[in-house]
Length: 264
Image 1 (cartoon, rainbow, N blue to C red):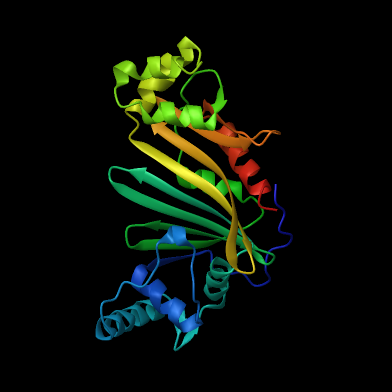
Image 2: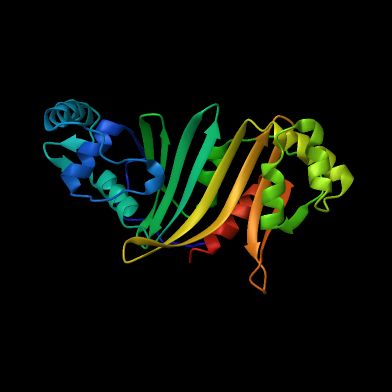
């Protein structure tokens, strides 16, 4: 588990709720040139007048919320945005459900960590203390685990089989065909064939302020029958293997801690 040491002195802002327009203004005022890709926070304005009008509205609402004083950004919020802009490492997650994408970024450097959540045009930023895995797991919510034995197969083989799970009636046979025990295939296959919600989580190491090395993924499948957690590892011979496990809270936390440990 990563230990970032003591928390920054003077952290008094518990969290900040922002619109994308407010975020754009803050990034402009702080001269922040980049934010994590997962947040999809690029420029959205077709013209300078449209941008200026949005900035005027954002300035008023941020001032009312106590996050902006003239041209000065609340120091905690400014620090969080700078951590997001130049982290030492980050956890990036995209949660797909009913045609929508919810986005999460946990970014950290030697001074601390910040969690950013985006849903639609709304974002929430908050300071994170020592337990970095906890807020990520909490953001994914709770769910009953699907009951089956752990499945471990070569990533390429398992991935190809999962891509073929379009028909619930054939799903078990597809997995059994790559060596998954019949009882487990009968549970996993139909559940994944109709999976309504899943989350892809990766870890990214940054060098000189730029994304350099990606780890993972950890994939969380929230099926109608229960949660499944998938993890990928590299064997001694360089081959990639993927494991599917029942998505108990402890297993999810273990997967997240393992991903964070790879970012040190």
